[in-house]
Structure formats: structure tokens, C-alpha cells
Image (cartoon, rainbow, N blue to C red; front, side, top):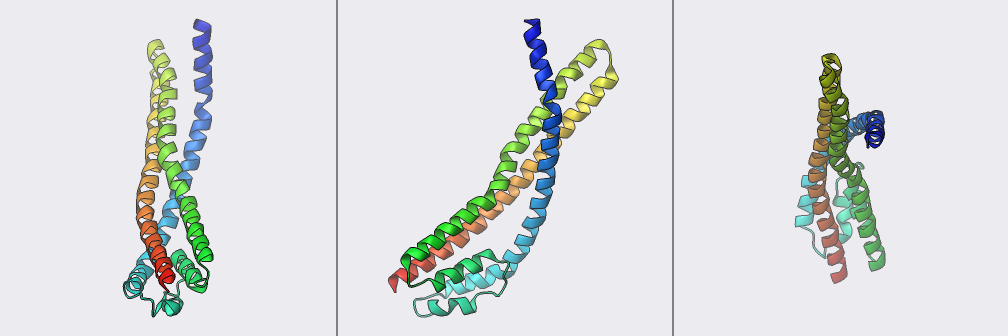
Length: 196
């Protein structure tokens, strides 16, 4: 029984370095995501009001000229999809394909925040529990310096994991709202075109 416990201890201790490396990777990805999210927020803020105004006044009579009235900002992804819908208005199949492509884009863009949201706490917890074993061994042998070091690692990994998850949570929630509004606008356009 002692041998099995030792093997489990070696396995868990050996996982500490990969867990820390993954946490550092997720931390860096969270920072990059936050920077990209801020840029996306600025674009959304700039073009969002114009798009809402165009959607509120959109009718069967003026849908053909919508592409000319949309914001000229090339960074607003939704604008390019709206223009594609107007350009392919003669084909219901193409319009449906464009809606599906947008849904795939949304799913892909939300995958990183979802991964951070789920994996950050898992890795943080692993990074907390793994050094606890050596910390308890250090405590039992009177090696307070070793125990303090292991506890420091344990708490640092928890903080980094939770930080990554928090960034994932905030960005996913906000982007979900944006993409739901955008998809609603695209579906409204598709429904209007069907009435033509």
C-alpha cells in the first residue's frame, strides 16, 4: 500500500510543472484576449448605434440599398456579413449559408473565452492541491521554508487560474450579447428578403 501511495505522490508532483506552464500560457492568452476584446468593444461602440438605426428603419423598399448605408468600418465583422446578405438576396440558399457561416464564426470566436472559463479554475485547483502534499511533508519534518515555498506556489496558481477564468467569463458574456443582437439583425434581414 505504501508503494502505491508513493507512486501517486510522484505522479501528482510530476504534474506540477506542466500545470504551471499551462497556467502561464492561459494567463498570456487571457491578456491577449482582453486586448482584442477592448479593440472589438471600441469598434462595436462606434458602429453599433449606426447599425441599430439602420435596422430600425429597414423595410422591403430600402433593403436593396442597405449596403451603402452601413458603416464603412471594415473591422466590424457584422457589417461584412450584412453586405453579403444584401449582395446574395436573390438566393435564399446563399443567405442561409451566410447565416450559418456567421454562426460558425461566433462559435469559433467564443471558444477561447469558454476554454479559459472552464480550464482556468481546473488548472488553478490542480496547482493548489499538488504543492499541498510537499507542504504537509515539510510541515511534518519541521522544514518551514519548504512548506512556505509550496504554499506560495499553491496560492499563486489559484490566483492565476481564477484571473484567466474571470477574463474568459466577462468576455464570453459580453460577446454573447453582441453576437445575439447581430444574429437577430441578420435573421431579420433574411426574413425581410423572403417577403420580397
